[in-house]
Length: 272
Ligand SMILES: [Zn+2]
Image (tube, rainbow, N blue to C red; front, side, top):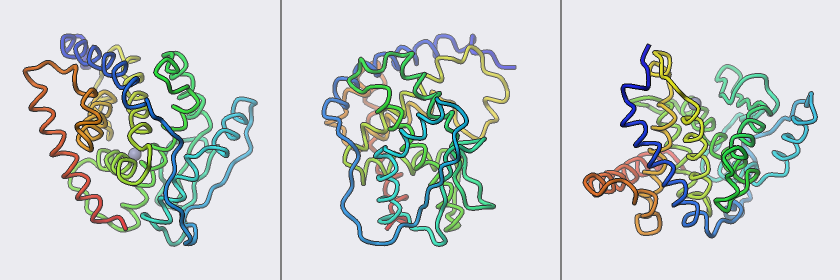
């Protein structure tokens, strides 16, 4: 059993940064937030959607929200233009488990509860004060999560070599697609990163399962996403890293620029 307490200094510092960064980005990166849009497309869809019957009023609201969201249009456009699937990939909303990709049936599954939980977290953390309300932030997170799962499907479909943790690779896949192909992709990524920070705040102690989990820790996922966003446009997103202490900030900024260029270049090799 690993207890977070021995890392208290580090953790507290991280969360201090997180809190500052949350406030900082709220007024900069989200300032000109617009709905997702990509260029028009004419080719056939390669992703289809299924909506299972909701069993509660809350789930029904979640379903309606998803159906009307730009996240669905964005994923469809990205799939048509850059990540084609044949046979079609099915995305099922209202599944029991997930979010996940099931390679056996070539299907992404998203529970309605995922939407409800994200909405609650953004609401509890008064996210609307950042200029992005909890509905938009939840849909941003849905967009990133759909792309994350699309990444798993893409890797399986194309047998793409992954030399490291696949979960990190598909986090990168989602963020790189947003930053390269979606007009307000950085804003979507920032909301998604913030959800990881909120989830981290709920953790009092780490145990072995946290460290052996296939995913990186929430707080690592949070900082890595901010790092890629910064790296994609250091002038625009300088404030995302500005609260890191002077001693290490320059080094981290340089590393983030390198990481963005490396991850972007390598994923774009596989995208149309
Ligand atoms: Zn995953």
